[in-house]
Length: 300
Image 1 (cartoon, rainbow, N blue to C red):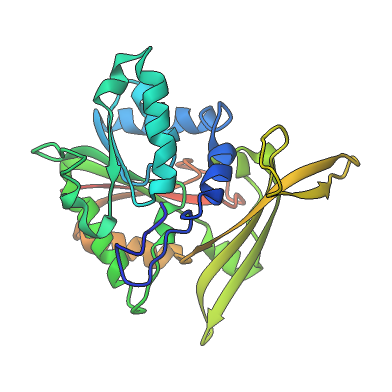
Image 2 (cartoon, helix red, strand yellow; image 1 turned 180 degrees about the vertical axis):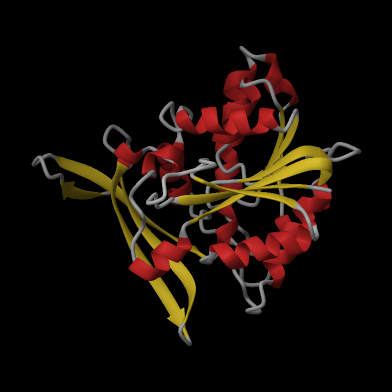
């Protein structure tokens, strides 16, 4: 999700120039995005008897399409209009051959005021079976006050969107590892994204008064076969091939696992059923280093 300046003073849509959105669509799209990832997500939703879903960080619509075609009822929001244009395009292209797309509601949505998407999204009267905020999207929301107040408000709004017994599925990168090592863990880069399009990801950690306050990822994405005009650089692969790459930068608030878990528990209430998965694994090997932590919480 890319936040927009209209949502909160000083919060900018990191996809607003359209360039990152275009490359991001290439990066996450296609069957390699929806293989193992689709299997894990669909299984998780079915385990909780989910039928209707709010994709609260739909981006280009890849996950929403995946879930629609798996038989779920999906409504999709994102705060970046540049990302949403790909979702609208997908809906237009696919509705001709599949009637499920006729009922797919898409609109701009602000996590800090989710109830007021009614001009484009009609929320179900009794709430959603599931709200999804996936793909490290939540980390786009900064912490201006230094007290996680915006994060807590957004989580509270996710909670309000759920019916009793509904689930929130929200994730974040393994920022504990990133802060400690100054680099991304390597083990499951292809679970969410097309690893074969990644040429390089440079990681930077900003520390203020000994506290990590921002992680910046500089992406170089292989755009071979994609017409990008002059907006590209040339790089050499280890096998000697010369490839065109597109560069873009995204910045994130580095959520530590313990603090993020505590925030979720605070907003969902004492005794909440809260499951933490390591790259969707319930019982990973002892020495496994996850790339993502996936939190599943049930509204009481």
